[in-house]
Figure 1 (cartoon, one colour):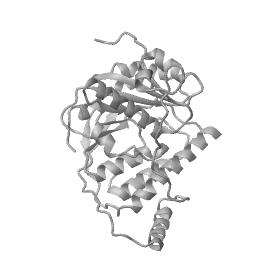
Figure 2 (cartoon, rainbow, N blue to C red; figure 1 turned 135 degrees about the vertical axis):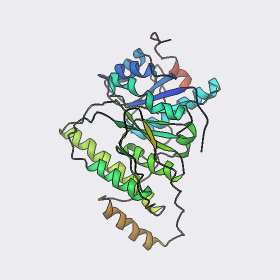
Figure 3 (cartoon, rainbow, N blue to C red; figure 1 turned 60 degrees about the vertical axis):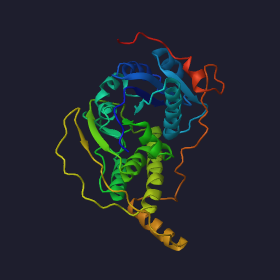
Length: 326
């Protein structure tokens, strides 16, 4: 699915209760080369995130309740699609976390390969590693499951800073639910033969803590990643190929990580065989639970300026207009 160079970039920022950092993130995203649209998807925040993002200059879209990261990404991408139709262009989609703050200005190298037409999706590898409060269980689950599925895993498999062509995003739909979206994106696009690159960038985000709220967040991540992995390990046999032998990458560099053949679907199996295989993969990935719905849901509920259900056009008029760099 090779695509030629793209001239424009849309930045989509899913946000939930990020009032303390969203203004800096938006202000930095606006300065990115090629970015002519910055959309913040307020996923049911209760701390004024939407108002602050609007004042900072973003187009603000909203969910009436918290629907999860994948649903926020779908809402943002749909808003960009409508803007593309209006403007007669096809923008690349750059997804950034809301808590990047001023470091979001360093995301340019992540978009460069996609804008140049040399990659279908890029995945960020942070040059500065923030000490996290967890034990790495979710990261290991994602990495091992991804490697089991396609024979390779990114250095930071859960990194949500990614840039995609419109065609690549559409190829990955329906997105996996919640925090399983990044793991599923990597597996699905590599299996379809798309070009996936890792790019080191100087981005930083807030480290999660060790309090009860943080632990519940990790538990939700673990469940979502597990639910994304199980059907992808069941629906196609693992692609056990050697990982690319690539040396260390320097900031701003990128290397191809795909070109892997798509795995064929297995012949139909009886239910007992599928259950037995599911149980085997469940034990392998340390997942407890059944196969879940991989859909992120539809009807995202874009909210207009007055808080009533609206369209992208209604949301757009709430955009701030700070002085943009020439």
